Image (cartoon, rainbow, N blue to C red; front, top):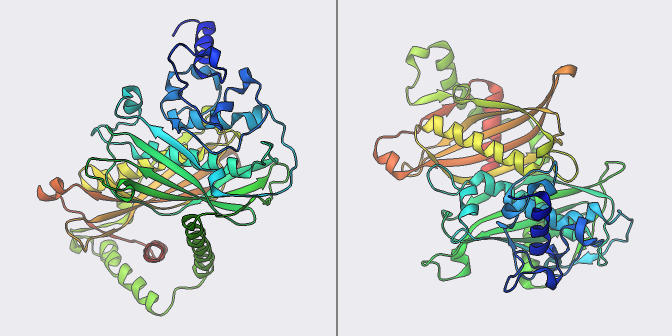
Length: 456
């Protein structure tokens, strides 16, 4: 890599906004109004630009930079590039109180380009053992991009920002519409689509063209909706944010859809407090009927079924400073990646063959996770859907617990729900997906709750 001084010279030469620092016939990898203000230590930038993006952020740009320039920051090709792009807010410009304004979705629109077809170093970062895309890392990047978009929306027109902490509150269903290839360029694009008083929804689209794709809709591989909430950095209470002014017909339609989702979330929260009764009580008894056979007469239990508790896996970790975000807490995308990889392993051990990702059903961020926390991730196959024998579905739950041994306490910080299936070749070779049975009334109630949430 050379000496620190030579690495620094290379970094400034390659990424400074001043043309005379660029080598002959060389273009900067990141070239947008937003990201042009990066490397604040050297460029002395003090504002956060709100100009609309020009060229997209290159996902591989940070791989070729000396990582010591971001000490203590979680390192991933895309998270580095995105955090660097918004670093000037925190490192140079002191937070100031500004009046709330109304902004259009285009002001927060951001694009990230993965040059998988030509960038072999980047491709290696995202390749799994089966030479497919690592979905966990992609989920991690989606969270980082949503965070960048939320910061961009909450800044004022002159680039200053109010003292806000913006955190991921939840992630709605992400349905994989088509397989994502590791050898073809990939684009993620997103913007704020809806704003409440202190919350906002960010919609992200993952696009990958192919010779068969004749339209933009056919290039769409995945859509994700993230909800972020704003907290006052001093009091920790909810804080108002800039409102949104949709301009185009598509932006207005996205706002209406997000408004409807927000109403449905409130209705679901109220319904979850109701007692299970009537028809739901009958469903509860049916679910528990088979579990009593497992518990009382295990020799007569259905061999094509298995108790939820027998599908469980878990792992534990101490949250390290290198995994923290710009607020000093553990990066939400890191938690999503760890949860996904545990869910994948759970489905793998359950099915007996490498699973295929279908969708992220839902993610809840209930409590922040801090550096030094003892985090335990517990997973299980919650239930299976076997109606379609050619595509059986495996629904996996991962619950993250923050444990404090000194205080003898444990709290749930996150709930993650993923759906997988198995490959067609495995089914042809005799792989069978078993029915999963709740062993307790609490488990049965939880299964019914998740099934209903999936249908709504």
